Amino acid sequence: MIKLLKPSGYNIIKSNLIHNGVLSEKYIVVDNGIIKDIKDSATGFLDLSDYIMSAPFCDYHVHFTRAISPADVYSKFLRYGINSVWDGGDRHLSGVIAKKELAAFMDIKTSGYAIYKENGYGGYIGKAIKTPKEIIPVLELGIDFIKIVNSGIFMPKTAKISKGGFTFSELKETVALCKGAGFAVHCHANGDNAVKDAVVAGVSTIIHGFFITGDTIKLMAQKGVSIIPTVNALMSIPETDNKKNILEAVKLHLEVINKCVEEGVKVLVGSDSGASFLPYGEAFINELKLLAKAGLSVEQVLHGATVMDLKATMKADFILLEKTW
Image (cartoon, rainbow, N blue to C red; front, side):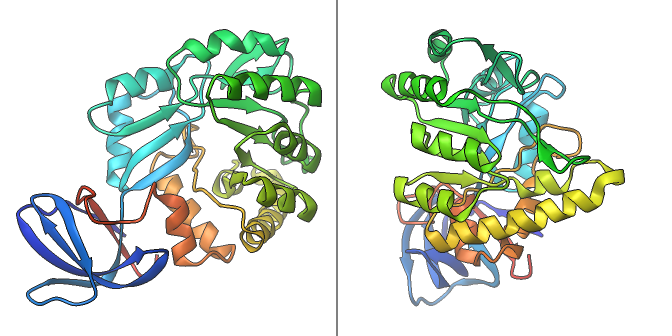
C-alpha cells in the first residue's frame, strides 16, 4: 500500500527513511512544505514509524501514447507516488506533447522518438534512420535524452531475441553524434553482443538487458553504465501458450540483476508502461517487488526508484510504504 503525504505548517515526523544511503529511523522537521532538518531524536512528533518514508518515485522508462491523454496518465502516476518519469518515445512524439501539457505538475524527460535501424525492430515506438547522420534533426526537437534501439525483443515462442539493431560502426557514430550535442544515450538492447556493443559505443544506460553475461556486466560497472531491467514487462507478456519460456527468462533476468548489484552497476526502476498489459503506476510497483525478489535491499530498490534521497531544503512531498511491500 502507498500513501501520499504533503504536510503543511510545522511538523515533526518520525519514520524510517533512506538517509545517506542507509534505511534508519529518523525525525523529519517540516516547515511550510519544506524539509528543514533530518534528526536522530526529537519530541512532539507524528509517529509514522510503522511505514517506510521515501521521496516521490521516478519511473525511468515509460511510453506516452496517443491512446490516453496526458492528464489521465498523470492521475495514474500520482496515485502511485510517481512525480517524475522518463519517456522512451513513440512514433507520434507523445512524450514531447505530454511534457508541455504537464510541465506544471510533474517532471518529464523525453526522448521524443526511439531511434531504430530502418527495417529493424522499433516501428511503433520511434523513428527509423538509414545512416547515423539522419539522427541530427531529432536532436533539435526539444528532447532531453536520446534512446537508440540496438536489438529486437524477447520472443516467447522461441525464447530468443528478434532481429534488430545497428552495426557497431553505425552505433558508435550515432552515439558520438548524440553525445557531441550534449545528450545522454539510453539504449534498448537485449542479448550479450548487442549490450556489449552499446556499452563500448558509449551509452549511459541499458534498457532491458536480457541475456547478458558476467563479463558484460563487469564492463558496464567499469564504464559507469546503469541498467533499467524492466523485469515486470518481461513477466507480463500476455503469451499464455509460452509461459514456461517467459518464466525461465524471468528467472535468468533476476539472476542478471543480482549480478549487476554485486558488480556495482546501478539498477534504475522503469516499468515500460504504455502497453495495455502494463498499467501506468501499477506496473512500476510490480517492478519494485520483482527487484526485491532479485535480491536488492530496500535501500537499493528505493535508491533506484527515486531521483534522490530525502534531505533538508527539499520540498516535503513524501510517500509512505508499508514495510511488507
